Image 1 (tube, one colour):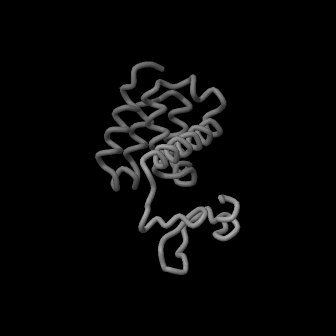
Image 2 (cartoon, helix red, strand yellow):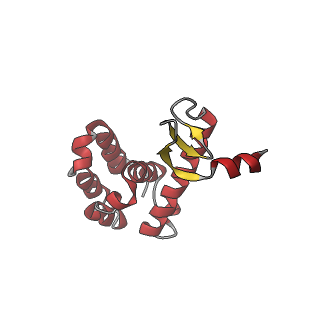
Image 3 (tube, one colour):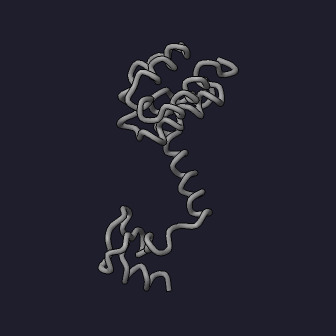
Length: 136
């Protein structure tokens, strides 16, 4: 059954408009009418945060998970998740401050950005967590 549907629908990994002008993805999933389930959203969140952790490990080194407090990791994953890797990498001074373990400077650099102007509450929370996190 699934192989027949796969053959008929084809696989598209990015959203597209089907012949009925509905936003569609995967093997013909109609996002406009069906959407996704909470379980699917949770699975996507898990996959996306895993991808963020991998990207951050590449930036900060393999010991990334062990060098920072949980709160600081949460901040960096949140920023990577929201910004994407390309835009996250534009935070050169913040990244260097984190590498130098100068978390006050990292929070200053986080707030000195278009990101902070666009998302003031989120960036203030993240800067506070970066600045006063429990250890290291």
